[in-house]
Amino acid sequence: MTPQQMWIAYYTMLRNEIVRILRIWSQTILPPVVTSSLYFIVFGAFIGSQISSIDGFSYMQFIVPGLIMMSVITSAYSNTVSTFYFAKWIHTLDEMLVSPMPEWLIILGYVSGGVMRGLIVGVVVLLVSLFFTHLAIFNVFVLVAAILLTSVLFALGGLINGVFAKGFDGISIVPTFVLTPLTYLGGVFYSVHSLPPLWQTVSLFNPILYMVNAFRYGFLGVSDIPLWQCFGVLLLFMAIFLGVLGYLFRRGIGVRN
Image 1 (cartoon, rainbow, N blue to C red):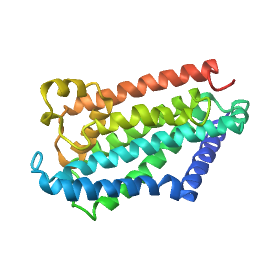
Image 2: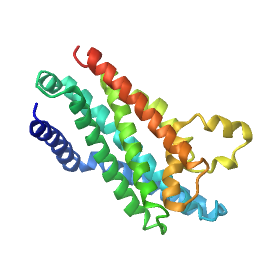
Image 3: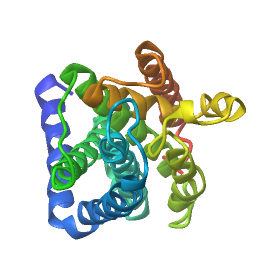
Image 4: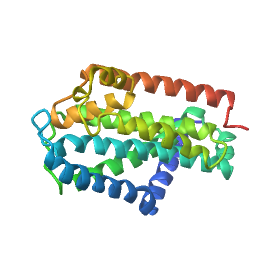
């Protein structure tokens, strides 16, 4: 394929994903916004009023970056796992695989769709949070880098899940039993420094902890983890997921059968 043809193919995939996300906004955008709003009310307004400040910020301000990141993670992941499995189910993926499109372009198209949904949901949740508290951006470059890399990472993870899924139940196992627990235990609602030493050590094995802290640093300028470690973990997992996806597509595992 020529560069122009590859751009047309990529643009078509991305446009279709954006149109789909916006067309069924009541399924793709509204649920995480409603869920985050409930968290703002229950944890931020009700419970947060009984909690003293954390690192000089109110409890509501402290949890907002984590709640935004939680919405981004679940949205980016669920978008790629559902759209890729659906493409396998109705065999539209077969048409792309027999086309001149290179495998990396197909991966890029699906991942970009997940990133777009994650970013759209993140922006909407951020706007909703402004009704409950005020936020100031401490470092816009760290903020943008953290949310982009996290969206890409979990879009890749959703694609891997979609490759291995054998049925519609298979696309909900990882989000329910792996992603949700890791997210809730990833420092969204608390500072790791408030945990006993043993659980602080255990928390360091949770990759979501690093993503939440990097994003929180972009907003508030505070982080439980050194910033270089946060981005190091992000880039490491991205490299692993890309390597796994490249191997799966080259071998046709869960893709061509």
